[in-house]
Structures are given as C-alpha cells and as structure tokens.
Image (cartoon, rainbow, N blue to C red; front, side, top):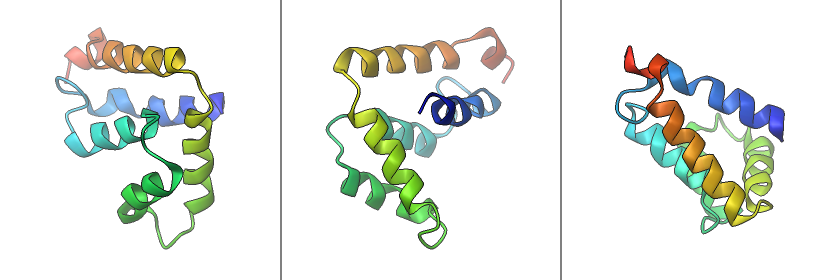
Length: 93
C-alpha cells in the first residue's frame, strides 16, 4: 500500500496551484482518503477515469487500503497533502 500511495502522491507536485490547481484531482484525492466513501461509491466516482474496467481491481484495492486506516492516519494524510500543496516546490507553479 505504501508504494501505491507514494506513486499516487508523486505526481501531485507537478500540478499544484493553491491546492493541486485541479479541482477534479483534489475531489478524487479527497474521495480516496475519506472514510465516508464506500468502495462501490469510489468505483463509481472513478469510473470516468477507468479505461473500460482495466483498473477496476486496482481502484478497489486502493480504496480498501484507505478504509482500513484509522481516522488519525487519514487526518495525517490530509495534513501531508496540505504540506505538499504549500511546499516551496509548489510555490514555483
């Protein structure tokens, strides 16, 4: 799971403007992190970005990884995202 999160988060600094600079990306990340979003809801949210179901299992696994985490860990992920958006590297964009 850690490797998957690292890959997902590695692309974020490439497109940050006061947040990510992309409302859709922020919405998708928040849906990924949120414990209120079920796996089936998450798959429905991600369906426009899923190329004909190829990534369906990966999306399910990603969401389940976040659902297994405590609220403290999820809050820390939100803090990390905030630090990424407000980092010196993102200030350049």
